[in-house]
Structure formats: structure tokens, C-alpha cells
Image (tube, rainbow, N blue to C red; front, side):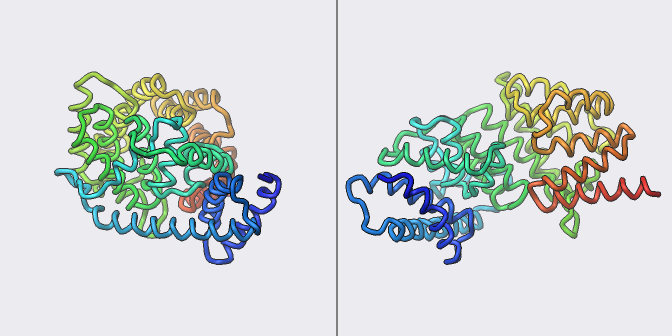
Length: 381
């Protein structure tokens, strides 16, 4: 097979699909799938017109993806209301698909990426942002995963840790954007919790409920992002909070602590505070210390720096932040907040503007830009 020819054809084929009406991310994913097919078929049966073959296969893949996405959305609409307490629904096989995509032949990272793309409905770009890697890197990872399972019988379910990771990432994407995706993640996690006795499944369900309970207060009437400290807590769903805390307390009592239970404990402390000023930041820092022992990721340490800034003052937070890579997403936003609290308004305004330019969503960009404008007005005035 002529690999050089394939590389030269890819941009042209993507362009044709875009002109036919596919969005860029969908076109890119469809072409990646067509390339997998080419690697499988061409050595034994090379096409007379490679470009036409790629266009035809990629277009068919894009149509299949659109149909699958429409089916998923219909399923979410049907079951989206089932995020309230009660028995889990068992009327569809989505959860089984999650387990099958988490195939034992794949590494955990590849299984998560493939499941998010194939079943979770996330784009390659969204998955790349969740993993803090460039989009082309994630596209290659997903393509490799597809090649690995090509021709393999998907009858051996993957491990629970991989499935929980997928559900967690799907919920996070929905929490920051599409509420239907978040509701679907809660539904599936509730279904999984009803099916198996697992401390981290319960911890993840508690975490989702505690975060989802705050959703009505996260944006203003005009769609602007409202930070946690400024949210109207009367809008929080108290029934969902009560359920989440009850699930968390029950699973913590089993003394089988894991990452999701620890995150849920932090969320519960936020939910338990009647006002932002009453938040027990000292205890939150202690839970973050526990979380870093379980998952010492840059994102966890970034969030810990914010908590340290609240518990010990902005200088303590800045010292914790200095241990991290400034290229980390949202690093500039956290530093801006801590610099402002430390009275360094000029540096904070500059950092807010920098963070706004790098923001991954329009509401976040607008919020950070407003923060920069507010401080610049104070400096001028």
C-alpha cells in the first residue's frame, strides 16, 4: 500500500466531505475510519481510483455516524428524565456497549477514547481537550484503537475502571455544555450502581448528582457563566444533593476509598455550605491531599492550588500553583484569581485576558474577558 499517496489524499477527501455538508470534526473522523478500511482491504484488492474509493467509504461512514448520533439523541430524550431517585432503567443496551468498547485488547486510555467517540457521541476535539492532548494525537489514538479491534469479536467485556472513566468524562462534557449528555451519564451510572455492588460506582453516582444539582445556578438568564462563589444557592436541587450525600456517606463507611468518592466528598462540602463564606476550605484541602495520593494529575493539583488559596490565603495558593506547568489549561485563570486576591490587580487583569483568549468555550471566554475588563476599569478609575 502506498502510504505517501494516502497522506496526500486525506486533506482533499476531508474537504470534499465538508463541501457535501459534514462538519470538519465529523469529516475527519469519517476519513480516519475509511483509512482503517483501506489498510484492511487494499493490500488484497486495491481500488482503481483510490481517491474516489476513500470519498465513497468516508461519506458512508459520516452518514452512519449521523444516524447513530440521531439514534443516541432520541434515546437520551426518552430516558433523560430518569435522573431522579428510583430504579434504574434497563430498556436499552448502551451500558453493555460501554463495557464491550472497553475491550481487554485495548489499553485503558485507548478504550476510553474509542468508547467516548463510538458510544458517548463526543467529537475527537472534545476528547482531546479532556485528555489535554492535541487533536491530531487523539485522532491517531482512536484510529489505532479501531484497528486493534477490527475483526475482533466484541464479546469480552472490559474492566469497570475503564467504563467508570468513560462515564466520568461524558458527564464532565455534558456538565460544561450539553445537559442531555450529563443526564445520560447519570442514567447509565445509576443503572450500573443498581446492577453491581462497587464502592467507586456509588462514589461516581454521588459525584454526578452533587455536581448536577448545581446546574440551574451555573449560568445567568443571558447565558453568562456564574462562578460557584456567586451562585444563587436557592436554585440548587436540594433533593438531588440529599440523595448524593446519602449515597456518599454509605459508600465511605465501607472504607474502600477511591478517586470518585474523594471528589464527591469535596463536592459535598461545597453543597453543605449555606454561603460561599461558610465553605470548609481546610477540610477541602485535606480531601485534595487525599485525591493527589490517588490521582496525582496536573488538573487535580491545579484545583488543589485554588483550595489552598482559599484556606491559607492567596500567597499559599500561588506557591502551590508555582509547582505546576504554566502551559496547563486554566493555569492563567487560576493565577489571575489568586493575583487579584493578593491585590496584584494589574497582573491579574493581564492574566484574565490571556486566559480568556485560551478558553475552550464561549461562556468561559466571555467570563474571563469581563473579569479583565472589570479590573482594567478599576485601574483606570
